[in-house]
Length: 343
Image (cartoon, one colour):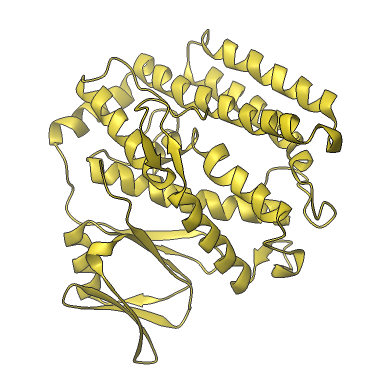
């Protein structure tokens, strides 16, 4: 089993990344502030406009360390990758499968079915743990409707129908999302799911964590030898990691949505940690972003029993495991792709 390594998050905008032998250095005004051996890292995520030396980029490419650059507020800018790894026959099969409507529909169904089931599980847990604090009838009604949509997925015959059901299920889920917030309800209220820019604090948190999850999934796919840009549900678009977006659909509720709710309900983040721009965009300040990143790293260390492998694994390894299972299915080692369904 793959070992869960660390992701280095660089949040100081004036920092510069360099290397010294097998060590990654973070410099600030020519002073070394941080040093870590590259073999301890599986990824580096830079926020803001931190520079990086060609030597550091080469080291990351050689060692398979994903190096991503995001804006100060979490919008993806670019990614440095080395030589394409993995079996070329695997990628050729992936490309053929992506062009096959029947196969693409079957895999897209697996991704979205798991997403709907996992989203229902988030609401069901709320219904079980806090019935006195919520509108139980509304939550129960939404859970039942989403169960019906999950059954309808088995009957659909094309990608557009799957996208339609996914959109309806997402609207139902986010319509009840505010009920998940049991603390700071006035300060944290989801009006609707929006992005680019996020217009409320919950959307700001969701978009930020979804960006982190996309980085993890894309890196996992690359490590397995799959092409993150060639997907099945999300179609090809220059610069879009379509397969990473496909695979992260089933992971969003358990990885990101629950963490947002936990951070708010435990008062780990406060409304004062957000600012509103002239265009209406809601942005996190530095301290809030650091708090979220610390919580994200701790979340990845949590252990679960993987539903297919039936083994205890760190949550942070799940993107890698799902990428591995998808690759095994494409190679013909597995009859079907076992999506991640949270139990």
